[in-house]
Image 1: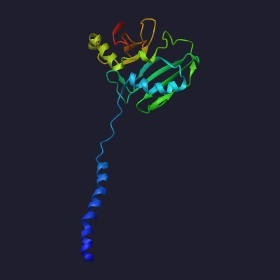
Image 2: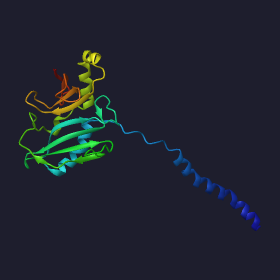
Image 3: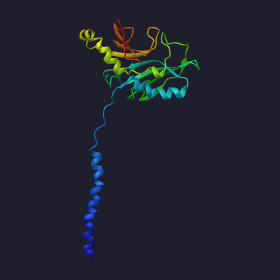
Image 4: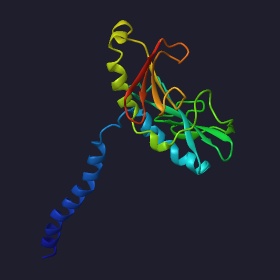
Length: 206
């Protein structure tokens, strides 16, 4: 009778061992981690904004700029890192934040990182602070508009890098994305301005 009881326990023990092996097999079959992907400017902005708001309740953006990363190729208005300069009129200070999808070295860290604040005199070049609510059009949408206006240029110079900058200047009533063909504003001979509130094409600069 005792021997029979042991035989009855064997299937239950085998089932228990089988269950314990299942999680190990599932863990072994996990897919490898996906490589970091670039993000839009508006997405990066809203990652940085809470930290900036904690620094100053009256904070406003004044400039958003794309940052190219060798290990995270840019793709149609999306970049591996972005930078935003925020200002506090009440404090008379400005503070630069970055958002990166990877640890890139130097002062560019994965996630949100802030540099020390600086004195703010009311403008940054020609740029003035703008309301957060004015940023309705994302960088990938601005890219699509800019490409439609740049077909001839892109045929002549297909490998020219593209960068983005968002500012509110006296030139336009709303903040505008400047889609820049070239490695900097100064070296570029072709830029497209897109209204960041309405999405409308504004101008071409050469």
